[in-house]
Amino acid sequence: MQYALNVTFRFAALHDASAIREIEFEAGQRFVSVDMAGIADAPPMKLELVERKIGAGEIVVAVEADDRCIGFVMFELQPARIYIQELDVLTTHTGHRIGAALIGQVEQLARERQIKQLVLSTYRDVPWNAPYYRRLGFCDIDLAALDAALIERRNAHIARGLDESKRVFMRRDLA
Image (tube, rainbow, N blue to C red; front, side, top):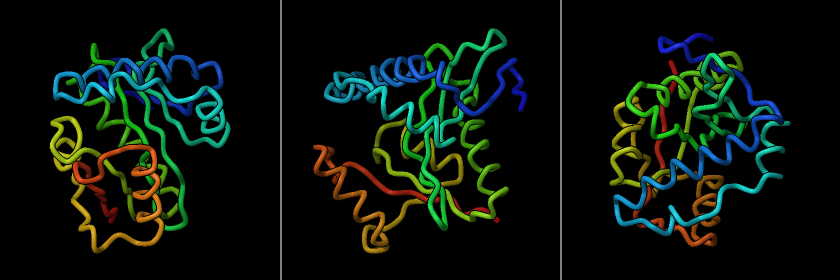
């Protein structure tokens, strides 16, 4: 799993947990620029959650030659799809298609498991959210077309205080 900028991809290991949390927090600081300071002020994921996801094989990291983590994608395997929960790359490394390559890693995993769809939920108008995912081939899912699992996830977002009126569910079907 090699990348053009001497970046490789691998499943996260327990020793990556702190770096994953730091990347998430650092990447969240970008939200200040779009008047979403509440996201920037949020603490990173709990260490226990990150460790559990690592144990489940549901985080892939992008690492430089010295094995330093510079990005990650966290996902959830579901029966008919993979739900992408989080994608973050250090701001010092944005613009090099590392995020797209991380999504590519999840797509490869989906294909190996004969899963035909990637799904995510993101902010509709934040440039590095929905517009970015559209460039990667994701399309919006109409609210009326959400299945029970996605409605449940949407309700969980609302319970956490996310403004779902500013968010959209998206999918990418795999051939």
